[in-house]
Image (cartoon, rainbow, N blue to C red; front, side, top):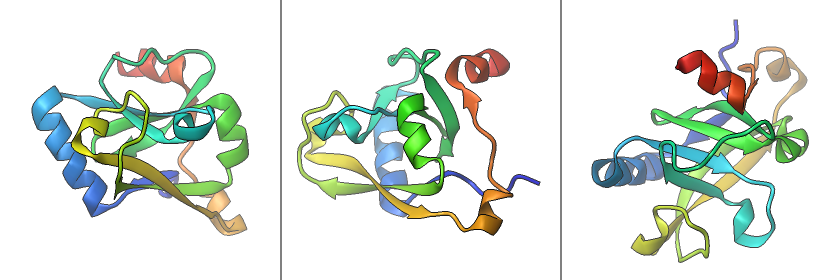
Length: 132
């Protein structure tokens, strides 16, 4: 059974997601392979970021799909990501930036035993087709 999640969120991140969802509706996340602020997790209104063949679906956090650039996933496939919030303004297009907050990612390596029970990933396009 695939019970171990690849991506989690903290209570602070969940609270911010709730706040953003109340204002913007359904949300999605994308972790790009960019440099500087481009490598932070970014929150968008669902559908505002075009997921393509170079992206993978890695799970959900607080009811939001979480995608990652496939090249970035190659590096992070052995880690569990935890999405948190920190004060400060990033320079991305993520929805929380005008609030003076930004999502950040923290990671830890999976054990060999955990690797065997990981939630599977899908290409972003395949995932979107499967959920309609």
